[in-house]
Amino acid sequence: MTTTDTAVGARRTGAEEPPPIVGGRRLLPMLTLGNAVLYLVYLGIGQVLLPAQIELLDPDGKVAALGWVSGVAAVFATLFNPLAGLLSDRSRRRNPWILGGGLTSFATLALLGQVRTVLLVTIVWCLVQAVMNVYQSALTAVVPDRVPAERRGLASAMVGIGTPIGSVVGVTLATRYVPDSLGTGYLVLGASVAVAAVLFVALVREERLPVVEPVPLRRQLAAFADTLRVTDFRWAFIGRFLMMLGFFAVSLFQFYILQDHITLPDGMDAAGAQAVLAPVDAVCTLAATVLGGWLSDRFGRRKPLIAVSCVLAAATMTVPVLMPDWTGILLYTALAGIAFGCFMAVDTALVTLVLPSADDTARDLGVLNIANAGPQIIAPFVASLVVGAAGYDALYLVGALIILAGALAVAPIKGVR
Image (cartoon, rainbow, N blue to C red):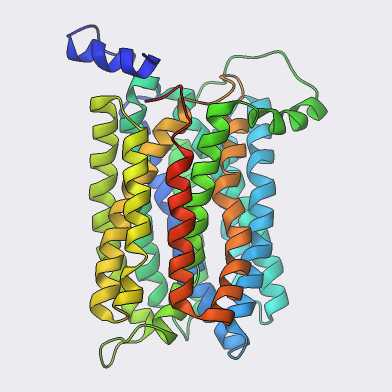
């Protein structure tokens, strides 16, 4: 049996409780808040403000322009996440990076709301992605730093709860500023990151991690590739990458899908539709996140839940193809929320159990976060080509096939059940 299996069996037979979470009662709710503002920005801006801004600047070429802006900016996210993780590992601190990333994100988002060309939008959105990933990489490393393995399902669920909360708040806030007050919308969403970073640092005190023997920076950079030589970690990376690729291929273009593909009720526009869909997605994602995290801890089984989540997500992609109307998009949103919420809760727990190095958790999670950011590079270009050649129905079907491949990727993992 794996370490997790043994721990679960011990709890069932009344053995001693697992070690406490470092940071006490404040840590888990602050992880929820910290993760919530990530998705508040990524979805509130990525799905509402940014598409609306690009449509105002280039209405005829909006699909290609959004694909270009999102793809180029994702390159910066991919590069900065593991690099920032490496730097926080070397400093043996997380809080300064969380604070610095949050405050700098506010400044760059304020600037983004003021630019008036697609080129400048691209440049500033790249800066936003870079500094947000400084914040994200340090925040992500807090769980393996301070939470024992036996309680990471709970911790992952608390982190995952932030996803629907941030999504619904971000989208709801953002729609209030479309189309006439985009600059104010960027300020409001940016301020949320700064406030969350300050609260996290103020309420969750940290002690410097134990000093480890310093490794030359060149060897640290080379070690990024070494992490993927660990078989279980490599398959976890592939599974996360494929799930995110299928998800982002569709979600990045949701604003335009609602405008151009879905038949909405009379009097409802794309922004108004997103304001309704966001709470539906949030409730379903929240319920699935909590249940998935609890079940994975209770039974010590991660892989079956991840596989089921991926299969459900793929099947859900066919709903808007068969029902391209308001009822269909509501059903799609609910089922996708359930699938994605369960996947993120359980997969996050699985990943923390297959990390290659206990001393370089932020670096290793930074490499894994390439599986989050990398699909954002590929998905916009792929999606814009698919939509241009065959329409939105084909985009949903391509997304489904990619996600099914992600379900198969978890099967070879041996160190976790």
